[in-house]
Amino acid sequence: MSVREGDVFEIPLEGDRMALGQVAARLGPGKMPCFLVVFGGFDEGRAADPQSLAKREIVLQAISFDVLIKLGRWPLVGHAPPVTDQIEWPEFKTMTNSPSTWVVIDLQGAFVRDATRADLRDLPHHTSVAPIRIEKAARALAGLERWDESYDILLPPSKRTRPVRSPEDIIARLRDQ
Figure 1 (cartoon, rainbow, N blue to C red):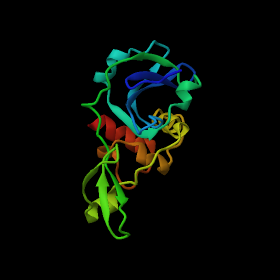
Figure 2: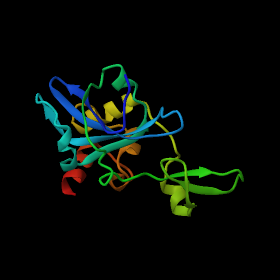
Figure 3: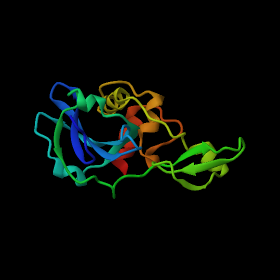
Figure 4: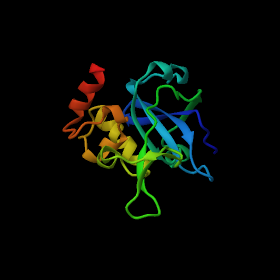
């Protein structure tokens, strides 16, 4: 099975409840990792409408892998243009060849700027996460599991706060915006 940019998938949560996600971008020369987004509005027992993505808020996003889609655990339900205008494209900190020189890079690894102290404090390293962590974070946002601080990095940058204490805080913050 080939997974393409724009593919829409379901993440099973519990019973008939599901989260809707999309492959927003393929990354790297081998196109192995991808940038996945998960939308709010956890559905119950109804067919997902891939065209409804533009009306939904992105609640999780991460560089990850498509293995759970390929294995059928996250079934494909359609295809739609990636919601690129809704995505808060992440930036990352990384060290260059010189051990004391830090820069900011984009999702594809391209140089954005020299890193500031705030960048060094606030930006994550360019890293990928296991798809199961995305699933567990979606379950936590749906109120089915306890929120773990390791999920904080999966939140869009504007949704991150320090510290995030519970899924209730995150849900309340998402509703208020």
